[in-house]
Length: 194
Image (tube, rainbow, N blue to C red):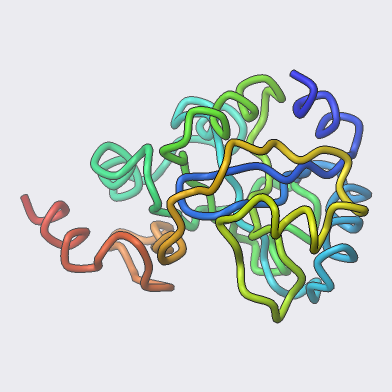
């Protein structure tokens, strides 16, 4: 509840996900997104990934997924698969990097999903590190790097780590791999061809 409150008022929260620690802000608030970009030292033309409580929250805020998006969501959520979908106009410009698309997923981490549910919206989940530095699964490292610049750190101990989420564009009739990651492209193709 405290994390959700900070997010709703434009604050920054470092939180665990099923891969690494992420930085959460309200993607519908331009001021919160601008602050996140400054803290990370991230250029505004690089899009910010989002996480959500579940597929219903995504549909409510962004509209229904495409058929290929629905199929992938059914097979890989919760989990480290990010789907690129059309961005609603209400999203802060810094979230999309000017692409008109937004990447969103449902993480396989109960705390991250609970924060999305309590905030009543998808939230950003870009890695909790400064741009150019390696992302981390260690909350102590998040504290050292960003402790003075976030409003709250949700420390549940080290996360699993490993590769980042796989990113797949589902805006067309066929899935298109954008970034290889934790879910293999072979597994995605196999699931889609079943």
